[in-house]
Length: 159
Image 1: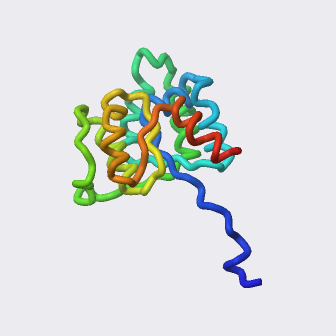
Image 2: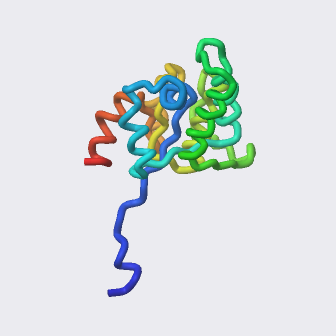
């Protein structure tokens, strides 16, 4: 048998997680995102991030409401970075194919998902979720809340 026929596994789906979902994972241990975390840590899914997303995460980990001491912030950050593929792309690569998010700070998640050809953007942010139908019409990736992702997608990936 030819070597190219030996490995017919499907590619591992690539996700973009917004900052709130990452905080649920690394800072709060939210059980609602645990199936996603298990899949990423187990290699069934991959997480994609960028320098801009990581900068926002670093800031968010320091917010008073997150209630993490500096050492815990560093550990939480490293936990995520240890499981995420970091992608960078030029600002000129920003897609005109995407709708504009009403919260300009959230546009980076749409752009990242588009540029890396992610299968999903997983978010709890209402501004991003409101764009789900428009994004889906472009046929490149889906925007879902964590619980919807677990119900609709994760069961088929890990099942």
